[in-house]
Image (cartoon, rainbow, N blue to C red; front, side):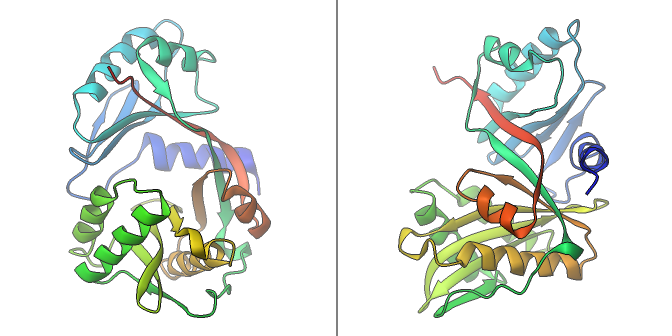
Length: 259
């Protein structure tokens, strides 16, 4: 993989020219920033083009905008963003860094997508409200009680479109939800995004996450996508790299400081 050219494509398609397919999401775009807004859901600065002269004024304006939004809001900083001291400037504007993730990409044609789930587990593509409820239950158990109601609402909205632009996968063991993951299909992009990957504690280490990557990869291949993209935490990064994913850059969420 030519990492530099894929990173350039990633920046253009998923950041600078990002176009949401969810009607609940809107984009505020100007010459310096692209802000993705889902009121009551997840909102983020996806792209910025700043220099030392323009950075502080733009950051102050956008930081105030993030503080005013409902739900989760962040400045999604990428490791190659400029100026070089952008992390310091974001913190000076009252935004706090979260955990850094590795941005990993794989070419779908080069992946082995045959991995099966552990014995006794069924992987189901979310198709109705009952599946969404099971997805949310598994995700909240797998992520230590973190609320996934907003993701559930997004998946319900996606089911109203054909084909859905966000697809959930729920893992069931004896009818009990034990894992949840999803994939996003951005119109006009070569990249399908893998998100989530929650597994309840008693089912970890058995190959469930790898099986969900394979299933979501097959879904992306069926739709003609070229790449899979993941923002990977240290827990999932080694699994993905063994599968053939390559790091493009890093990403770190900067969120408004809590008073």
